Image 1 (cartoon, rainbow, N blue to C red):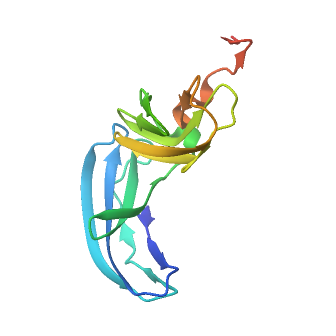
Image 2: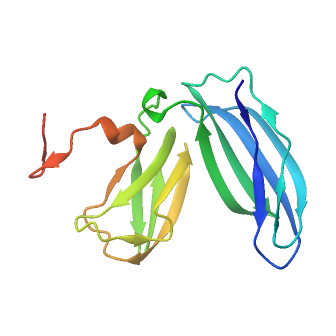
Length: 170
């Protein structure tokens, strides 16, 4: 049976009052079911949430997204699939981005696993190198490198041929 068992770690010296939220979503990132729980995490410790059984999840088409919130600020997030990535039925996330000064905002229309941002020189250093999108946007800061010739890809793109001299090999 498929399940999730979330763990929240507090690596600070202060107790943290957090809200943990999680959702079952389809490959289009639409929420099918959601749940949330408020927890107290003592300093320098971790807390396990109750194991959640997901007997009806479609392992090749649905996934779980989760977030930890401190007040109105999201402090952590992630996703998990229940099959090997090559078997999950990802949809084209139609990744796009905008660049403003030293920030890049990436948008996905559907679930995008392990989004990667590259430039022509492949020397970008970003505030977040790989991340998942749930049919939404994320803004990252450019720490080093120039946002010239930006290319975006995710797990959905892994089956595409590698570029050779600016063209794709068939």
